[in-house]
Amino acid sequence: MKAKSTTSARRKAHTGSRVAELLGAQGLLEDAEAAAIKRVLAWQLEKSMKAQGVTKQALAKRMSTSRSQLDRLLDPDVATVQLDTVARAAKALGKRLEVRLVG
Image 1: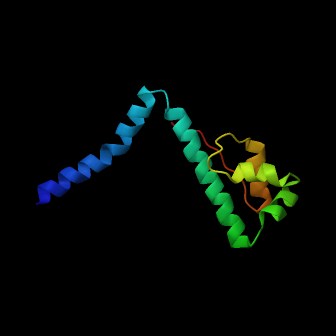
Image 2: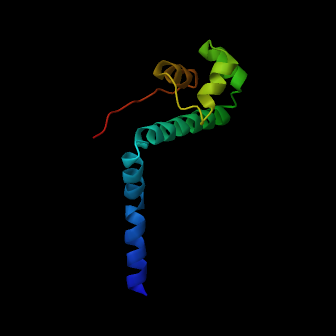
Image 3: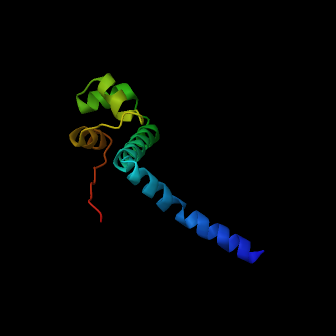
């Protein structure tokens, strides 16, 4: 029984790398990573807004932008976003944007 769970754990440990390999082979890895990053950014911004009781309208005003631009920023399905827009949203929520390159 133990061998079975160990084998299962090994399979699960490598599932992510198999998916990454498959997406890479199909030329989709970069798009998938960009979409995942955008989803996390949108989730973090929404979480900060909720914690602070900030509405979309109020955040847009703090950022000196339109509500429709903020909606695009918060939409996890819209993968394109400019760093300065994310930085302005973070600043408007009392946060800062941190971007790193990893290898």
